[in-house]
Length: 405
Image (cartoon, rainbow, N blue to C red; front, side, top):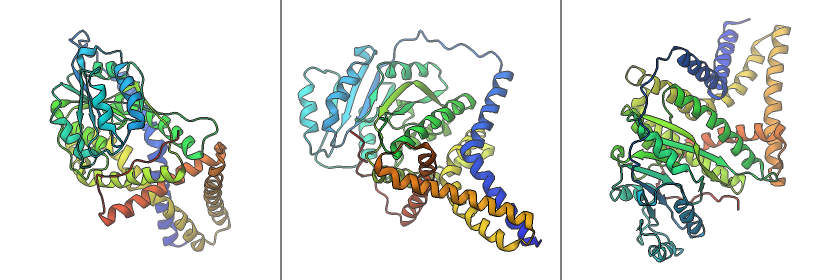
C-alpha cells in the first residue's frame, strides 16, 4: 500500500478520536480524574453555612413576555427565601405588549419590585449592563421570564456563595417534554441530561465552563460589562469570572424548567445563534487557551466547549470524504472490506438521521432515529453558525425562539 494510504488513514483515525473524545471521551476522562481526586484529596476546611442570609436581586430580562409575567412574578415571590432579602428587577425596555404597565400595577403589592422600561429596544445584553448599575445586593441571580424555578432555587444558589472561592453558581436547565412531542424536543431533553452529567463532573474536577442562562448567579462585585453585541452573555460572564481565579459552581438542586422549542425550525434558529455566539466567545476568550496560565480551566474549556464548537463539526464531513479517498487508495482485499464497512456504518447513521428528520413532523419518539437526527442536527447548526459568524452580521438584538405551549 502507498504512503498516502497510511497518512490518510492516520488522519481518519485521529479525527475519529477527536469526535469520540468530544462527545464521550472527555466525560470518561473527567470521571476518572474526579475519582482520582477523591482518592488523593486532603480534608478540606469546613465552610460556614450559618452566616447571615445575603440580600439577592433576581434580574429578569423580559422583552415582550407579558404572557409569562404573572406566573414568573408569582414564582419569584413563592421562593423559600426571606422576603426582606429578596429583590426583583424586571427589565422590559422596548416592550410593546403592555409589560411595563402590568408590572407598574403590581408594584403596589410587591414593594421590592423594580422596573427598567423605555421605548427604545437596546437588546438583552445592553439591558443587563443597564440593570447591573442598579443592583445593590451582594448576589445577583439571572433568570429568563419563560422559565419556572423550583421553590428552593434561590436559597440553594445563595448557599453556594458561603465558599469565598465561588464567584458564580449555575443552576440546572430541565426540559419539560411531553410524550407525544417532536424529535427536536426529545433530543433537546436528552442533550441537557447529558450536559448536566458533564457539569457535575466539571464542578467536582475544577469549575463549570459556562453557565445556563435560564438560571445563574454571580457575586455582583465581579460583574464586568459585556459587549452589547454578545450572543452568549451567560457564557461570557461566567468564563470571565472563572478566568479571574474564581470557581463557577454547579447547583443541580436549583433548576429552571423550560419547554422545548416549538419546532425543528425554531430549534435550529436557537442553536445556530448559540453556535455563532460560540465562535464569538472563542475569539474573545482566546487567552483562556493558555494552559500554562489557566491550567485546569484551559483543559476543561477546550475539552468541553472549544472542541464541540470549533473542531468536531468540521470533522464529520471530513471523515466521510477521507473514507471515500481511502477506498481509492487501497488494493488489499481485507483492508478494502474494512473501509467499506466503516463507510456503510457512516451511511446508515446519516440515513437514520434523515429518517428522523422526515418523521419529525409526525412527532415521533423513535429513539433509533431521533438520537442520530439530533446529533447531526446539532453539528449542522454549528456549521451554519460558523458561516453566519464569518459574515460578521451579529447583533445583540434578536427574536427569541418560540417554545412549545
